[in-house]
Image (cartoon, rainbow, N blue to C red; front, side, top):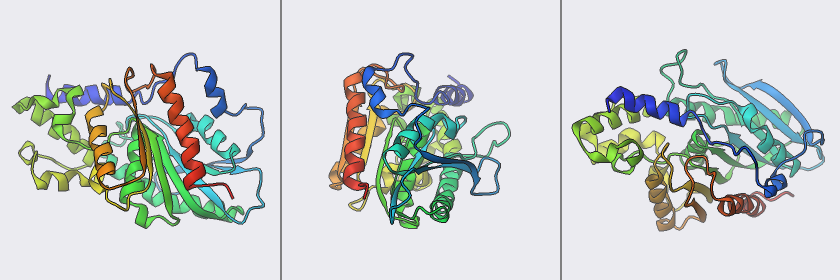
Length: 316
């Protein structure tokens, strides 16, 4: 497969994000709120930057009497090339109904209009956007004293980067990170789903092109396997920021994922364990990127999410 075809295949597959089941399991109703039920107030398309896509939606719970609130940010899927915060309205409404201030944030997508957008530039936009979310909530009477950040697929990748790389720059303490099927590292040997493990001239060049696009810089195949390569991709690799101070993390991955590297998630689990970071690594053994074939494990992920929120970002 040519270098261009590798990159095109990635964009098409990743752009699908996390697939949704046509028929949701009965337990899913525990994590949804009927559209006709009042949850509080929603303020849409609040600007946080100069780019047209630099907008966020803010969900404020009905109870506005507390001295402080926890914020939960959820970042949308879409393979870094598509998607919108409105697609996560169900999740954001559910979080708001629990008593959290919730926010969905858009970021500049890599498309024909923005060919220079990258995972790195998107992560910077998220980092720059969080203070605006916190300030807007405070201006509306909801003071924030801590936050969680999560997402699906591309959104999970960006959430991990904020929670692991940028936590020290956060205007409020980051208490936890959660999400599903987000890429966390970029070693060619792990990316079997694209044949990058073949270690041929063609596969190495394809991996260098793809990872370079994601990092927003030119990467040369000769760097693979060297400390210089880690430095080249560190800004987009959550794995390389893990240490003993990393925040508690909840993650779910499908072992049959053909869109992003499942093997990279194994590395992440091992790194979190080695550093003693509280975390849960939920593997869906019969599922791909859509987490579509393992109801028991998927339900466990949502149950764990409730547990993590109660433990690390409790409602006061």
